[in-house]
Image (cartoon, rainbow, N blue to C red):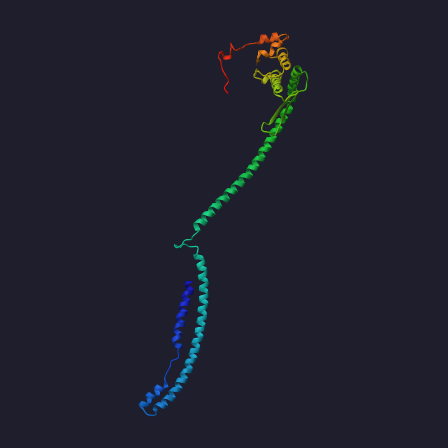
Amino acid sequence: MGELRGRKEVLVRRSASLAPIAVEPSIDTDEIRDFYDQLRAGLGTSIARELTEVISFKSKIEQFQRHLLNEKSKVLDVEIRDLNKQLAEFDRRYGKLVAVLDQNGQLRNLRQTYASFQAKSDELGQLKSFFSRYDQLLIDRQIKKSEIEAERLSLQASISNAADRLRSFERTILAIHQFVQGSRKASFEVRTTNKKHVVDIVLRIDDDGSHSVEREKVFIDDIALMLNDFTRVRHPGLLVHDNIFDVDDDTLQRSLEFLLTRAAFEDDQQYILTLNVDRIEHCRQEVWYYELEQSVIASFTKSNRFLKRHYQELG
């Protein structure tokens, strides 16, 4: 733009210098004739005639000069107009460019634009990191699932290898159930599962599901673990049942009879049972009742309380 403005200034000055030359001088021949007539009679007319011819010739020359100057001026005007158009276009573009500048010549929104770009760049980086982490977690999850499945299969193989022990334990349960319930409608199963607890140990007895029968199921399972040849070697040798017999009288009698006459406890094993004596008052005529009395280690009543003091369970 500066270069174009300099070129325009030169052309304008050149065009302005041509203007005075283009003006045709005006000479009054009558005044010249009167002047010479006064000097010499008759001479003015002759000089005026010759002067008119000279002026006519001079006029032709000046007319030709004016034509050249006009043509030159037209060329200069065309070039100046072209420069004006270029300058106008540059002014428009320049105005558009400087519109984003503040009064100090700095970009108005550069800082905000850069901050926005930086925020978007950070967000993009976080998203890339997140997706990369997500893909890695999917791979890790699949690996863990494969490892868990391998462990589950290994555990299932271990259970299958222990089939003889499981059948032995089930026979012990069936024997106890046969004596107490009068039937062999019971089962015991160990199996792997996809749940968090990994292994399901399932014991079913006849008519289970109710509160009293579920407590009898616990009794049978605990006693079987203590008596079975395979499980007793890992048993701590101590079993405590605190008022577990919330069952009918017949089941209670059959359970006590099994404990006192059929359960083959080892010398290093100890079984502790708490029982309300009112539940067995009608059993005094049973053959096993004497054995029960001989097995009583401690007896507590309202006058002879446990821990030798009155206590109340907190609500």
